Length: 427
Ligand code: AMP
Ligand code: GLY
Image (cartoon, rainbow, N blue to C red; front, side, top):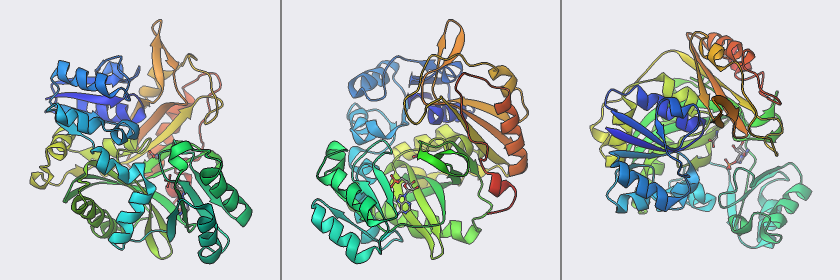
């Protein structure tokens, strides 16, 4: 099977690493890829958002399967365009990607199925939004721009002033442009936040496991939100019955409801949940693999990844046998550029990669790198996802941080506490 992967981050490197180990894969291509991906796949200088160019590339290569990594091209209709050209694609149509691209649509699916989620409402009128906050939410809320806002459209408000300002920023000041023309105002949930990944083709749900991300830039969950600074799996603090409930009582009904509404989902459905005292509640859905969670989910999968993605793309998941998972733990530490998640430099040389990769159990996924004059240099905010497997979470953690300590680039920053509490049994 000839596979083309769209994207060039840590998620795509982890997917390509998994595909490279799939017996059914004969050739691997990426667009645009990065310096790490280039060791496993032929990279093409085509941007993930250039729908016409991606379709042309898939046609030229005559790819048997095109796997779309990021959300923006999915929301913009890349999967539809590829399908119209007769290509087999892993990733949902624009209609189904609204589950991520429109928070109001996600809430609609949740309410229709009566699924556990934060109490909330969608508003285009700021006075109604503020009225809802005052009447229902007891002085604390989360305010979200409806559309895709690159992770910046969410404000956690612990007081009325912050909530009102966030509502006005969206609806009156247009801070998020069209993405903020509708605002979602919802109850603030507390607990452990987790990521649930499942392959979905309409009716059939094949779980790929739970993991936990670390979204803030700083140790102890301080500082601004990022795309994700590290992750681990499995989650020792989630009981098997709770996990089963997530797949059977939340993810499966959500997928079924989407299919009933003509938004047939075919790809990876990523459910973000808060484990509250009242049980798991849905925070959000994403229409694609998470980053960096993919770095810890794929290495634990003991199955032919390409076959699974192809079966999803063809709508044949119900015929696939349940994949096995390794009992090993996996952990990834993201190394980021100085300044991230704000402005940062690129083109900074990275040292120590071969030594890090030689640490037992370690794989270094590239998130934002490029090759220049035979050197690997930084090319993004998140630069590397240094990933380790181990018999225990503590062992995976030791190995990952040993590898991190061997890598150097000017300005680098990373969190020192990925899975710290979980590895010590403190969660
Ligand atoms: P979203 O874009 O909906 O995923 O929100 C981004 C982040 O904001 C989530 O990953 C959570 O950390 C946080 N968040 C979103 N909704 C809530 C909520 N209702 N209660 C607490 N935190 C939330
Ligand atoms: N790590 C969270 C995300 O991919 O959205």
